Image (tube, rainbow, N blue to C red; front, top):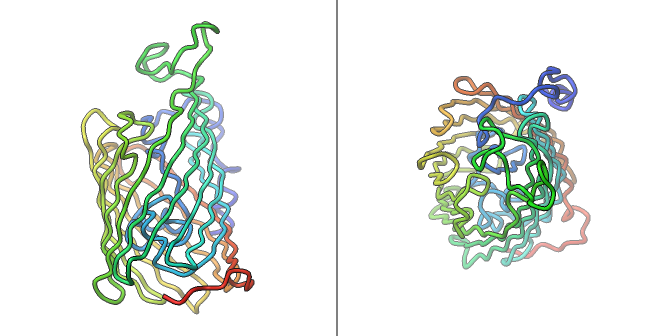
Length: 320
């Protein structure tokens, strides 16, 4: 499965690279979510148990759940939209005050709407106790659009025209800063409740949609389950919801096996996901695949390679 996931972008049908995508723009853009392999494999359910490099992307408060110093490189691909995203994340949660950063960039539908972007996130979290932590994250997004949507050269789908470079010159569609905030509550051993808001400055557009959501998860050393739900206020004409659930089991301390489900009210889609990898005390190599069963036909492939800096002894871990 890992080999297939790595090869999939090269084996995708030629139409993905030669014709405009017919996926709805918010769906092709995947709502601006950059996912780690674990998050994608669990259907996107990562707000409660998504620690490590997943946390700056899902819920910054979750960074404090584990004492780690992780560095991860990631790639995300959707052949039907010729969507390719590359980037990485680093998280240091070896202290009660944890910090993380993620930088991703890529392009979407180059033969159609033709968007490219750079997405930078910085996050901090503090554990007030073993039971309660909060986190905040800043996000800078610059997104350019050089093509046209289904309504052609118009205000709705033509991007932002540059008056000094007609007819196709464009200004950045989005070039702004926003922020996320979340909290994590652990009432008993293994049980985690989480709440998070993203793009809370309310940019009021579908490129940086404001969302409010949360999750509940239960995890042990080799097993975890989580369910999440969120409200999206801007991606579609009216507020919509997404619901996600996933599970993970670690086989022989080295092989994480994951599966998940996502319901997307806005796109009217149902999707299943799965992932596996190899996990060592020093590094991990993982891959995930998500495929819609109903709604717009779409496949998302996520691959990641991580190195655990705490294993080198260069980052002493503070006891909780």
